[in-house]
Image 1 (cartoon, one colour):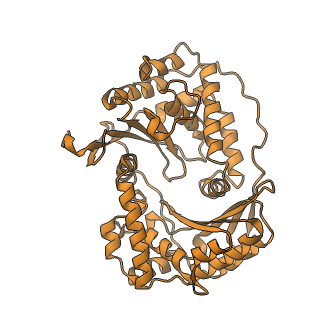
Image 2 (cartoon, helix red, strand yellow; image 1 turned 90 degrees about the vertical axis):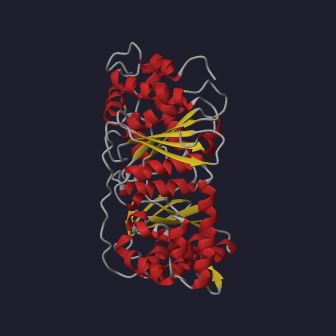
Image 3 (tube, rainbow, N blue to C red; image 1 turned 45 degrees about the horizontal axis):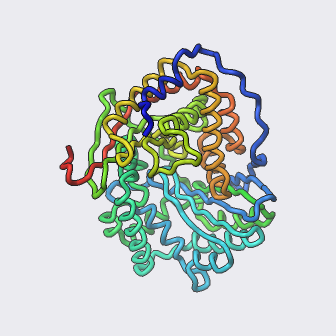
Length: 437
């Protein structure tokens, strides 16, 4: 560990700067092909066609996420989605049928939606979307399929329960979200065990409707994809899916602390903050703060450090609604009490003084690198196009996000730090032998 403390290093970056000193950043060219929006008969498709890619991928979003669940049925969104991927088409589970033709099918459950992702070589993707459409329109909720899905989800939940950082982030989310969007993404094993075929069918009928469907695609796209998605949309029933307004609980001034005990070797501390959504004028500045808090506390390294190697790291959860910023302290690398204290001093310092020109330039470059790293895979680009468009960045969302970062000034970073980083929730995961102290 460096002899300079976290607070000292941030103080060096912030000291003696004058407001507005930042050098102008030249306008950047488009990093990715311009995305376009297509109306598929009332269903929106946002696509970024890139014939330099060797694969193509499509994300199918449905308004059937965590915020549609009752607290007593935590996990029903994931269980329904898992059953859909196991639904037989021509006698073969649809995920296996897609795999046999060279593709892959996965799903992810989030606050606002569940999204299914299909990736394949370009010429096979339309046929695979049509296979998925058959399963989506007539899912199998038989006891056998539910049992297989329940077993798989239970194993994944148990794995997450053994990950201290995942547990701490979930603790923060439950304290921050005012809706069911704060429930665990895969649910609880107790609630999943009690869900029946009737429960799953009712959740599907209420939420899997054409009005709650959208899609986004990236890669080497073929003309047949749009027709396949039209077929998929036509297979879902009409009807209104009532929007759920995302809500966060106000973060109190006294910094609540939530403690849990797990079989871990050292404490993990998560500090959670409210954060601006992607469509906000503050988006670029928060990307800079994420890069600063995630990278300024480590000694120079020839490689990018992974989560386990960092003393302190940060995640800007801009794909959630409401958005949040999570900063974690890794107790295997640093004394958590000292690191937490210095982190909070750093957040205060960033609100009091603007970054100097060189520091701003450096962390904008780092922020851009982090953002681009999360956008390089076809799956990531397809996902970001869809989720960003839903949050106000428009159809060409990834290029718009990078443009927002380019325009960020030192004054913007200081303002956003003052607005968002002064109130927080602390979630601690402690070794069981500590007895919760």
